[in-house]
Amino acid sequence: MTRKCCHVAVDGSQQGPACGSFGQPVFSRDSVRIAYSAESIPPTERVGGMLPPETLTEYYMVVDGKAWPDFWDLGLPVFSPDSNHIAFPFRKSDPLGMFGTPWYVAVDGTAIQQPFDDVSQPIYSPGSSKLAFVGDSHRGKSLVVQALPTGSPPQVWITVRSLFYPTFITDDDLICFARHEEKETILHNNSPTFLNGLTWRSGVCVLSNHSFRSVWSDEREIFSLEFVI
Image (cartoon, rainbow, N blue to C red; front, side):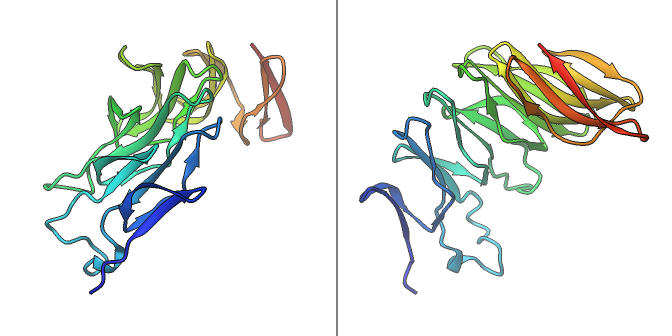
């Protein structure tokens, strides 16, 4: 059997090692850096849709042409607005239960030590000084905030039943919608504002002057709510 390999090239220059397949390449905002996930074993070598038992880790992240190896699963990489940082969700393999392994978020190749059953795509603050993501576990959904560059421990701001669309307005202002104890909540920098009787209907629309607007309903009429920081 001929082993099939793929390559990623940018302007005619090969990026990273040969691979079995690769994910969507992502460029930094300054168009200088590139990252993508890659599969080390071609799909033709799978057995019945599964990997051979002796091969549990099969993915690696290629960043600026260098491979960061040994992942079981990977999410899409995200560069910070200043192009200096890269973050992505991942999980490692576990020979005793590879489908029950926790998810983490890695920043610049280092894992944030907060394991979850699932994690959202990470987001950055406008000045690239902070990163945030939502982690899902049996306790509920948690909002995790990490200062950049990494070094200080991450902050878990809140754990509730549901969290919607965390958004940085400024480097120091993070907002999201949450649902806790049957109450709808606007969370601003870990301080909740409860909205009794309202039901969330649509996502956040960031506006100028540090404000955002969302559509809410009280089961009688739909109206727009504006929150100014």
